[in-house]
Length: 225
Image (cartoon, one colour):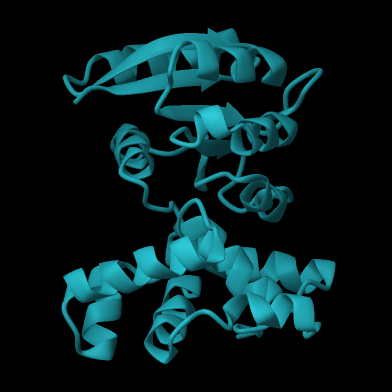
């Protein structure tokens, strides 16, 4: 199946470079280009995009607002957004994930990294490397978002089994299914099943949303090195 990719960035030169790269791959194609967030939302819907490469900073409707609009539209529940940042850990990373982004990628990433990110997002996975997750935790610390002990937050996790909570903690640490399987001494397929069940119970779009929920609920707390 061909992955339908939408480019959303106000820099025409960057979009052109991404188009050449993506269109060179047999399993993906560029279905549109947007120079602002509002246009990105329209095209994501009209062109049935699978993955949107979304710049955070754009004139008018920015990437955060556009991502939130896409995530809130039931007609685009299949659309995955990958935020493009100047640095891997951007000041808006936490807001991006809360808005519904599947992850983020630095604009200076290698071509293989970009293509891999598109495939990972299209598969419903999250782009949260250990380094990125460490940065994410730092942002929660900086913003005072170290978890919320309020009943409303904690009760979100009541539907999870003990094993599902255990897996959620590992997901929040930025670990892959294979890594979690090795840590918990179970099969990767079992881990995937637990992750999918946790997502369904918590109403999470993908693993990135699970990370946010884990921290906001207080299940996992940020800590310094």
